[in-house]
Every structure is written in C-alpha cells, then in structure tokens.
Length: 106
View 1 (cartoon, one colour):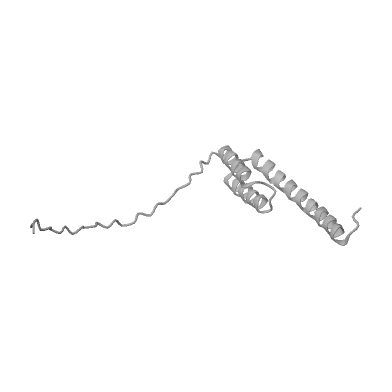
View 2 (tube, one colour):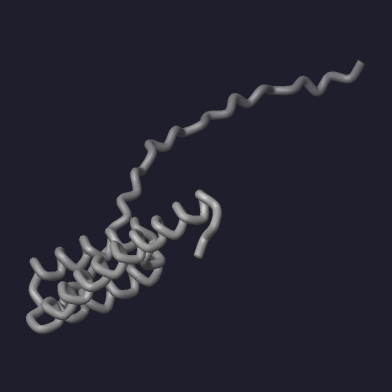
C-alpha cells in the first residue's frame, strides 16, 4: 500500500485511468466486430473516428491506427487516395541586361 499522499493519489488516478481505458478498448472492439460482420461506408467512418480517438488518448500509436485504417478500408473496397494539390507559382522571366564593354586600350 502507498504511504505518501502523492503515492495514494497516483494509485487512485492509475486505477481510474485503467478503468476508463478498459471500457474504451471494449467499445473499440465491439465497433470493429460490428464493422467486420457487415462492412459499410458508415461503419468505416465510425471505425476511423474511434481509432483517431484511441490515438488521441495514447492507447494506440499513430502508425498502428493508420495500418488498421488501411486494412479496414480494403474490407470495404475503398481505395484511399491522398491527393496532393501542388500550387504552381507563376514563373517570372528574368531578363538580364547585357552591357557592352569597351575594348579600348589605353
């Protein structure tokens, strides 16, 4: 058992966080099972949302979440395409002035 006040508070906090994390992970598992039973676009949006929340709560690493999203999108048959819109800057033509040098010898 913890003795100091800060250790007691830390124990209370860790128990509460553990309880919250377990309930969140159970919710995540049920949503994913429901999606895998019948993959739809709406289900995919829901899975994406809960995976993003898991990353925000530091339950999953971002790369793991991205990997899972990719795998689940393949279940639906949606190919996620990232479009990079490159803005083209107008190009200026630089005209250099050519000066004539005199070839006079002194």
